[in-house]
Amino acid sequence: VQLVESGGGLVQTGGSLRLSCVAFGRSVYTIHTMGWYRQAPGKERELGGTITNDGYRNYADSVKGRFTISRENARNTVYLQMNSLRPDDTAVYYCSADSTVNVEGAQVRAWGQGTQVTVSS
Image (tube, rainbow, N blue to C red; front, side):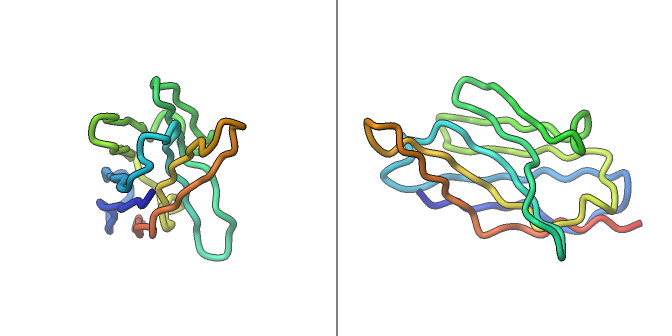
């Protein structure tokens, strides 16, 4: 599975951005959960939000009420709508896709290349 993100950029505090991520490859049918993570300079990568095939969503506390994750299964695409952005949202945002790769239930996570989001004060 390969992932390609788009939609990052520079925005002022209080603004909005929408990130998109498309999954490619012969194994896309094995994806069950897609998500967004972020990594700020000098910090570890952290969860933004995830969404399963049947639409169950999970968010980090820091983005609840401001970010919305959605998915188009037919297009193998996941979105992250980010509203009320703050300077501490500045980070590289990475798309993820979790797949079950065998009958024993082994899991593999694919990552996108990342897209920069910068929020100015």
